[in-house]
Amino acid sequence: MVDLTQVMDDEVFMAFASYATIILSKMMLMSTATAFYRLRRKVFANPEDCVTFGKGENAKKYLRTDDRVERVRRAHLNDLENIIPFLGIGLLYSLSGPDPSTAILHFRLFVGARIYHTIAYLTPLPQPNRALSFFVGYGVTLSMAYRLLKSKLYL
Amino acid sequence: MVDLTQVMDDEVFMAFASYATIILSKMMLMSTATAFYRLRRKVFANPEDCVTFGKGENAKKYLRTDDRVERVRRAHLNDLENIIPFLGIGLLYSLSGPDPSTAILHFRLFVGARIYHTIAYLTPLPQPNRALSFFVGYGVTLSMAYRLLKSKLYL
Amino acid sequence: MVDLTQVMDDEVFMAFASYATIILSKMMLMSTATAFYRLRRKVFANPEDCVTFGKGENAKKYLRTDDRVERVRRAHLNDLENIIPFLGIGLLYSLSGPDPSTAILHFRLFVGARIYHTIAYLTPLPQPNRALSFFVGYGVTLSMAYRLLKSKLYL
Image (cartoon, rainbow over all chains, first blue to last red; front, side):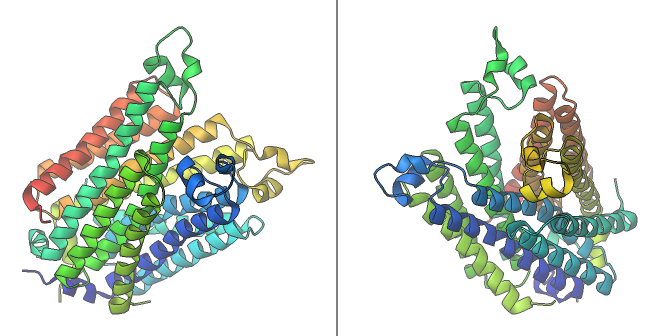
């Protein structure tokens, strides 16, 4: 039987596991940020939320949208759209026997770019801060996809 | 050569595979629920859907939004935002050699909390039913992330 | 120690890695398509984007929505909702020792159906082109989930 704990002895796989966990935890913070702004600004998407969290004589008026909440939600959705390909492609790339220092450089660049993207989106910083950090993360993922398909294509 | 079928002999990994498959199948049901409400209530997002599914003298009037459909879509998006971190972190956590009974407790709590979250969202149950089930799932994922980073951090 | 590069010698796993990378790369193209239409049609979601990319005497007027951009975004979100279950269930199914030709048939059908779904959504082709391609991808994922749970259920 394979001792699965040995899989984690692989340097690249351990690094991937650490960076993936960090960037997923960052993504989860976006849910908390949305909840924070919804409660602070009393902006809810569901009538039952207004009743409980927006106490007052006329709770239904809190069923509305708000620039700040929508901005956090767009940043969250952009995370989903970009972190999912990184997770899938990065996991398979980690298993394809890449050069460790190249692989770890890919992971570091991606995580750094996505953290900067969130800062640029939520501050907000003027463009092209957000666009550039988006394209760094995008390029890193495509670079891993290219290396993976070049070495292991099997259709 | 590694016999990959042996990977599935690991108790924690098999349990993760089962719970992950169950919660992903549940998430897929949300697509069917959206389609069901769209067809039943004749509420479409695309003109070509109105033409085919909203037969009648004036199909374009079905290009509209509806509270019930939007509620299902919000529940679906919340699933995406929470099940993705569970999948990524849970997979890596399963490979990091956790105590089996602790690991399986994490998986069970997460799956139970997310199923309850869907029920609370779609019924809808009064708050804080939905908020509590959200935070149970959120806490379970963070707990796995913490254990993983504590034992296997490699940056 | 397990030599992780051997994992990729498994025929089914290599095929899964290739098809998953291809469909994730296709999904990433949707971000580029959104950016393309936003810049070409000057339709932005953030004030800072209008200032930089929508140069002119009155940039704020570009803070608006547009049918074409919204269509690409719906196609992207539908990809997220369907490719994530395929990734999670497909990965675990690949590790459960399936018959190679059956497994590869599943992967090919899914990838073909999702590419056709994108074409049907963006052209747009009349229904039920999009609905049928959606259900082929959906059925393939459920079929893998069923086979996985049947052979490896462990709760």
